[in-house]
Length: 264
Image (cartoon, rainbow, N blue to C red; front, side, top):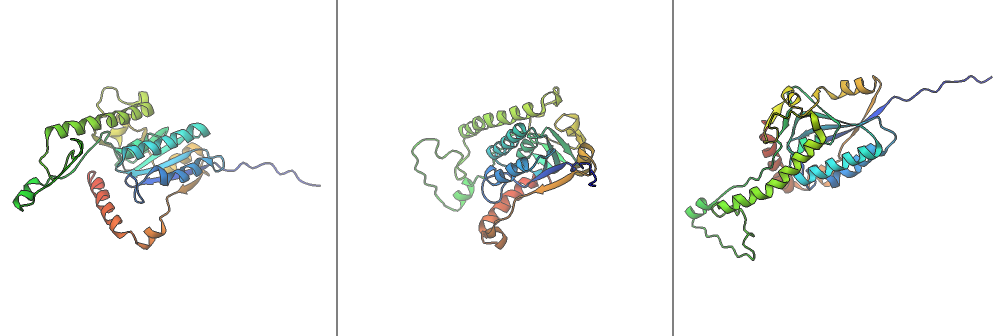
């Protein structure tokens, strides 16, 4: 006689997408093209109880931040899967844009969060060129073609033009944060001035939901036996062999500058 074996439910599983590094196009940065297959798999394989984002990014491209966040939010809504973001060292600028794709955001007590703003940075060399007897020759069709030329003295009209370009990008960032955080934001504080806050400060302002680490928090939400499935980008053969040395060196300098803004 056959015995009846009761059905044993499988423990919940949560894909964990690591979003670490600067945001931008190319092989080094986090970008929508490179992350799309990984994000799609995380939401589509099986029936995940949730998807977790493990974020450690000082920011970068506003467009790539928007594309990645929109993809995550779109799939979360389509699949009806909650998304939880966990911040490591920093989620600033574009890194915070990514965090706001989640339903809730959790930080370490020392995590740096915020920098809701837009920056344009360059160098100017006109005095150095004059001392060295170097003449700059530029021919353009269109008066704005040499906008913010680092070899020419800075012009007030160029500064105003750059600020005008930054304004709609900044507004898009603000709108994204307001839509994601809603009434949780402290309505009496100016959180959109590109300042950054640490741990509990960000909680008090409503930028994040609390201080918590990923594993214990997900266990509290989905049970002690929840299975965490890591999803991360794979390095290309060229990257593993070090064949793109020049590109990596230049990219590393750019990355270093972004991380250095937060003392990391």
